[in-house]
Length: 116
Image 1: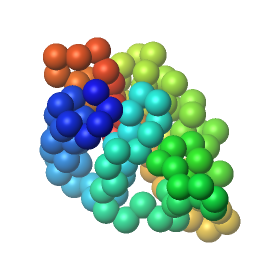
Image 2 (image 1 turned 45 degrees about the vertical axis):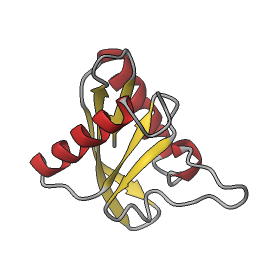
Image 3 (image 1 turned 120 degrees about the horizontal axis):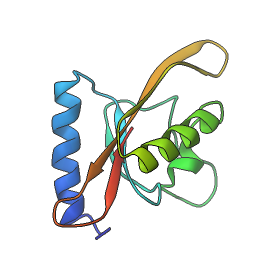
């Protein structure tokens, strides 16, 4: 269910709880198709709208310097069904960020979401 109801609602509630436990404010919740369904906190300069036609595709919005590590981490999180952490990733020329991919399985569904 990718319409903002049902399984998405469960994933949104769980992702908000995870962020609270980790004392983190920034992140996004994405579907298995890498479509952003929820923004948390301040995500720029890491994730920002791409020029052109509007899209919520994470892969189009993420800063280009994070894309290779993000793709590898998401693939591992999907395959292993566990959280994957990447530390001290460079964003642009002067910023560093730690990234964690947390898979969230929707209740009563085979769908997975990812909190990044």
